[in-house]
Amino acid sequence: MKDRMKILMVASEAVPFIKAGGLSDVVGSLSGALSGLGHEVAVVLPKYSEIDFSAHKIEPFLSPMKVWMGNTRHFCAVHRAVLSGGVTAYFIEFNEYFQRNGIYHNENFEDYGDNARRFSFLSNAALKLCREINFKPDIVHCHDWQTAPAAAYLKIWYANDKLLKDAASMLTIHNIGHQGVYGGEHYDYTGLGWDNFTQDKFEDYGRTNFLKGGIHYADMVNTVSPKYAWETRHTDLGSGLQAYLNAKGDNYIGILNGADYTEWNPSSDPLIPARYSATDMKGKEKCKKELQKRMLLEEDPGKAVIGVVSRFAYQKGMDILAYVLEKILKEMEVQFVILGAGDKGLEHYYGELPKRYPGRVGSYIGYSNELAHLIEAGSDFFVMPSRYEPCGLNQIYSMKYGTLPIVSATGGLDDTVEQYDESTGGGTGFKFYEVTPHALYYTVGWAVSTYYDRKQHMKKMIKKAMETDFSWKRESLSYIDAYKKAIQIKKSR
Image 1 (cartoon, rainbow, N blue to C red):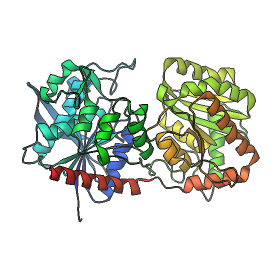
Image 2 (cartoon, rainbow, N blue to C red):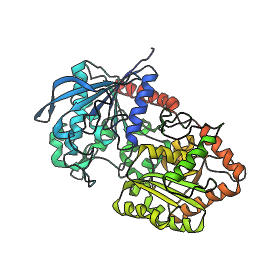
Image 3 (cartoon, one colour):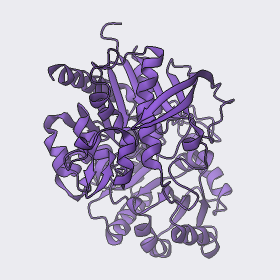
Image 4 (cartoon, rainbow, N blue to C red):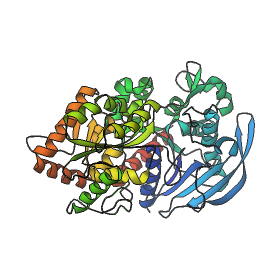
């Protein structure tokens, strides 16, 4: 293949192996899309205890592998799996760091105190693995703060390395609210040199900021939607890093996430009771009936059903929904289905709602992938009241399933959802521009009134939403263009 690249993905999670959030979906599906374009893709992940090695045919590959961290020498092992799409996944086995419950935090959602060490080790071990197996990457693609140090290791430790000196780096920011800020006492362990512990690199008021250091050293930086790229440059959503992102100039861009339609597609989804498409919607009626039955709702095909699948976190605005949900239930003919977990107060609130509103609210505290698919397929609307959303995937899945999103106009939600035009019936969803209970209430009301009073508009919007293509076809090419630019930047230096 002409211009075939060797791409090294370094990440803390990736489907189908381990998932905590949307980062996992992006790493897994983007890797597959790039491999499908003919590029050679290797993904490096930690060997977490939660990964089912037998299910994914992961086998021992290399042992021991020596990795230096500062003045500390570690010995680890490497396992390997080859996916059907041609992507090779490598797993760094180091039980001291990765053999524990939880990826980033314990059962109380408290960050592990050694996260700085765990993920700087992963970042360096991924590059050491390249040397061990003679894999010469054209681009090293780092994801979020956890593997941002890999961009720095390339330029500091491996600047003169025969195999890695020419490798360019790209850092994708999936959520700038998480920067990997830990005590400065961890910095010496990274081995990146105290001359790099400065305000424009890794130092952050005496602490270590991995994301900031990665932004400085990466040849290209991107985030996961054009709107979020603008927001992080020009608003408080930059979380204190606005100046450093602006300093990147044209080397900081937004590339919209794609969706994996091999998993999220109502015409082929094995997890829903009936398949359907934009030209044959009968299956969606069956999915709605099954959803109402399973969640103990009144089985009425004419009632509007609003679905929620979300972490119960400040970012996601689930407290905003909680503030107006009962007013909505009292004043509108709707049913709610809620799937999620997180904030304990919100878990209690949403978990108790079915008892207080039997037949009208169903909730599941926790996560179920099968139920998430059923909610997407069986609901009429899907609400996302996020205070900020770098990209978001559920609104994209919802549109594919003919479930119209009700979203705040932030980040990727604004980029992907086209506002309903009541005069023509155009659009793919309903957006509100002030993230307040008042705005959410009236937008839900707008959607519900459209459901009951403008059925032809609903049909038109659903068809358009289902036919809108958010696959990785286009966005994977955008990443290839960004990789090429990163390589030119590296050569020019």
